[in-house]
Length: 237
Image (cartoon, rainbow, N blue to C red; front, side, top):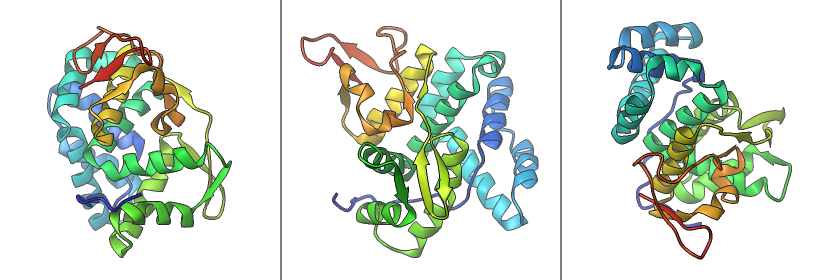
């Protein structure tokens, strides 16, 4: 795998799911990110003022920077609609937002998703090696991985099997078509492919953790569907 020309890492603090989950709910309720509530939530789960404030900045980026998805979520879900979603669906949405904001999270999941097709357990050394091939081997990457792994665990993608080793959790099935569309959109954006074959979405490593077969062509306008004889047609952005 070649070194990425844009090797921006960006993230270096763990932002727990429950902080982002509550933040997105309030965003849908009030229309804006409530930083004061984010601060309260982060202080409950993060030791140290400096670390908490850094994490708040990253959380704010996740809830504001992917503008197209945020607006699409606003258009399709009220705060109550979001609250009524199964936690599985909410975690898939948060995972998509994180990955678009900080693509290293996407590349982390794709790297380990690829590995899990041929082995049951992967080590921290494997993760370091794969991401270093894209982002360079340095202290910034090490700190980012320290943040990413607990976030991935909190999003029900992996669990720790022993010290510095991890196994994949069974894939979660996204049942809500709009959530599935957003999840596919994140894959296309982060991979830079512009389109994927509909039949591929069960086999690409991004879907090793959350499966998006609930996607229905024509349900929205975030992703476009073109019918075809090959691969069930194309989903594109």
